[in-house]
Length: 291
Figure 1 (spheres, rainbow, N blue to C red):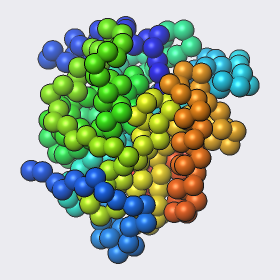
Figure 2: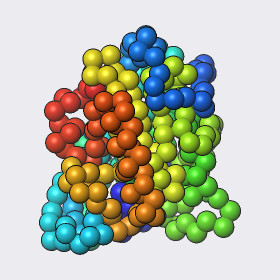
Figure 3: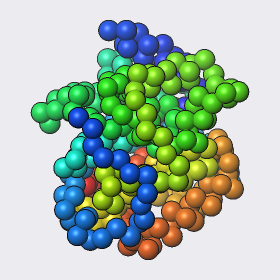
Figure 4: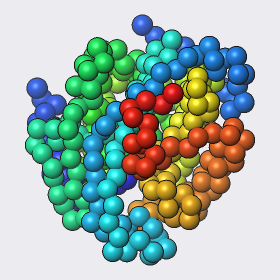
């Protein structure tokens, strides 16, 4: 989700706050990895609460105009993926300084955060140094807010999204540049198409462009549930998926629809459980774990 209207105010707080062994990575994979490899991976996935976003008018979230005047509350979820060969943090939520500053409101958005990623890792006996890899579904404000807390990790990033963030000639607002600069200390692993993070098909990042030029989603092969797909912001609500609604602020609406179709084909082929990351109805029943 692109919270352009409040990025400037919060990015100032972020900058003020910021002033205080390698695992195998493969770029070749197919969705149909062997069941044996999927079981051997024995993934553990914790759902982290990376903030709450109250929207007073949902009109921006459907180019069809049918959400006008509606309100909703989105959860902002991050996912700690623990694999025998390393730990991946998927998405980085709202800026950690909100846990101190309290809720911030600008136009249709009110954003808040109770605990930082660092605090939630500590609750699990971990520290940011235990995070080997970081990957963001895309570069919007509410998915990159705590990059400063995991600066020692390797950033797994789509070439298209990297270009959208830092490419020559790319016009980026000053406040966005401030947030993007938090990724500068990170080592990068750049990919195109999709990335098999641990080389066994258990954790696959795959491109679903349109919301942003290099938007990605995440495929997990869980020991109990089996295949699980995390949407990033391909969809924001259950209704968005049912009706194929595209936000007005997407970079390319036609490309988004094409990505939706490819995503659903993958979900059908795998028989996957789909989790919409901003949808409380999908997140709350997980009770902090994908199994």
